[in-house]
Length: 224
Image 1 (tube, rainbow, N blue to C red):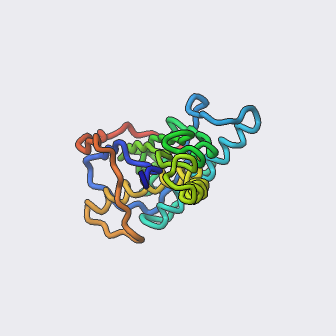
Image 2: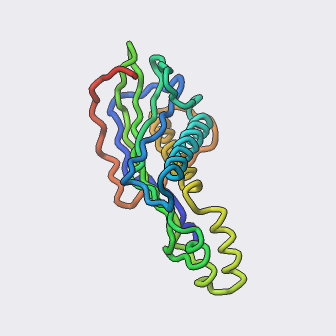
């Protein structure tokens, strides 16, 4: 049952065009619709939580992309990405914080988190137009591992509870999601012959993954 806290690529679709290495990558804050949230907060506290998740995820994704592909920075208001840059944006389809107490004490799915996101990657063309080159959907969370009460030995259960506190939750899911999005982007570039920086990360895919669909050329639109 080990290793049951993870995020996988559910589906990724890419343009059939030959990709060029991005000169820079801009990451926009993801959207978090109210109906995608399942957390124990309301009112101002909920909005603070939402903003914290967005900023932390943007920073995590920038860090991962910078390590593997190209310098990445948040896409803030007023920035106008230059030709050849990539823009990464998306939305959370589901964000369930679960229960840390239940994960640590019971486990086996009790209190598990869930994070699902749909990411798009676009390349900036002449006069600030964008052309979508990829759509990546990720899904995962934690945890199906036994907790303190369901572990075979009391000592092992106590250790398991401490590990759960450190390696499960929304923050951990954000890191895994950013890692898989970056890994999918890096994998595509490497299949086209580009040598990338950093350590190669294997893309975890669901068994039902179909890699055949491709993104069709998208309509061009101006960068806001």
